[in-house]
Image (cartoon, rainbow over all chains, first blue to last red; front, side, top):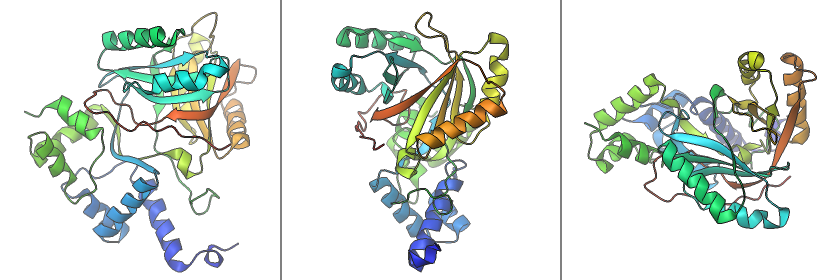
Length: 169
Length: 169
C-alpha cells in the first residue's frame, strides 16, 4: 500500500526527516560550535525542527543520547560477564547486578548461562574487585570473558523506517 | 589544560540539545568551547572515540530481536573469520574472547540483530554460508529480557538511568 494512503503528507515528511537524521548522524555528528544548526542546514530545515525532533526521540526513549562511543579498553577496562542463575532467582539477581553503576548492558539469554552483562571500570584492579563483590553478594560464580581482539564494533544502525517494514510508532 | 576525566564524564551523559552544546560542556568543566571541540577531535583521531553521534536504542526501532552467536574457532582461523563476520550490516560486534573450559568452548562472539527471531536465524545462515563455516561448533543465544542498556560508562561521577525494559517477543 502506498504510504500516502496511510499517512498525511506532513507525517511522511517527518518520518523521512527522522530517517535521515538517524541514518546520517549516528556517525559523523558535527563537532563544531553549532552542530544542530549544521545538521539542519544539511537536511534543509531549521535548527528548531532538529532540536524538537531530537527531544521527541529522547522522550520516546528512541534516542539514548548524543555523544561519543568510546573504543573498548581505551578509556577504561571492561569485560563480558556471564552467570548461570537458577530461574526462580533470576529477577532478584539481575536486579542486584543492574544496580551496580559499573554495569551497562544486562541481558537474560536463553542458555545455561542465562544472565549476561558488561562490567566497566577505570582499571583492572577495580574491575576485579567489582566482580568479586558481585560473586559475594549473589553467591553465584561469574565467568569473565574480556575482549581480546576487536574485529568490528559499530553500533550505528542502518535504519529503514519507511521502506523496510520496520515499526515506527 | 583540559581535564580529560571530567570531559569524558560529562560527554558520557550526552550533549545537551541546545544551540551551543560544546560551550555548555566547557562551562561545566571550567574549559572553553575551542578546547572541548579540539579535544574531542583529538580523541577521534587517536581512535579513542569509535564513533560520535546519535546513540539509539535499537529495540525501539524495529530491531526487536538480538542474539549473541558464539563460535568455537581454531586459533589459526579466528582473525579471518572475525573479520568475515564483522562485515555484515546486521552484525554489530565481532570480538575474540577467551574460552573458559570446560564450561565454555567458544572464542569468537558476534552480536546479530533482526526484526524477529526468524530474521536473526536467516542472518545467521547467511553468515555461515558466506564465511564458509558449515559444521563449525556454535550456539545462538537469544536475549529474552533486557534488564539494563546504556552506553558504557567508564568513569563514574553520576548515577545514571537504570531502566528495566520488558521486551515483547
